[in-house]
Amino acid sequence: MPILTNEMMRAIIMDHSSNPIHKHEPKNDKYEKIHMHSDNCIDDIDVYVLFENDIVKDACFTGIGCTISTSSTDILCELIIGKSKEETLKIIDEYNHMLHEEPYNEDLLDEANAFKNTSKQAARIRCATIGFRAVETIIKGK
Image (cartoon, rainbow, N blue to C red; front, side, top):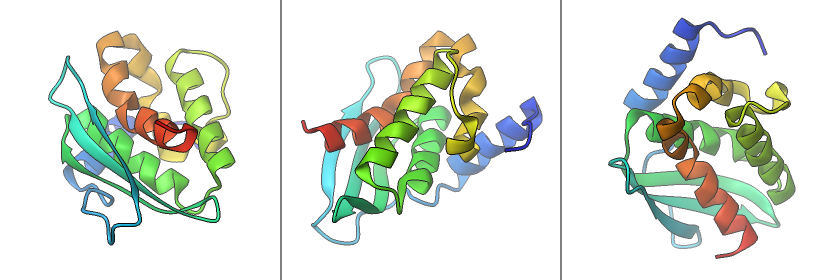
């Protein structure tokens, strides 16, 4: 992963917020769903994950979210499609390490590395993790 400048990180976040690829209704009723909301922000989303033999076949979300939650959830969906549940949990774990300024494997996070400065804005961590917490809850069971 190349070194991301602040401008590059901002561009990634704004692009995924303005043009989220995975913000849409699920394609059928076979998706597992969880509703997430934040008391501190406008975030009020439903996250959907479709598994086939413990592999994430698709992931999407609907609802209202701030720039940070929309972009981070969109990037998460992109990261986990095609991954096993175990690989998905590893990505979530590494993302959480990054947000808490702990050592992490940036190669696993791809564009999610754009959120590495979120730890400097503690109130935004909740926004940056809402989709990640949703998928983790779906995988580990409600």
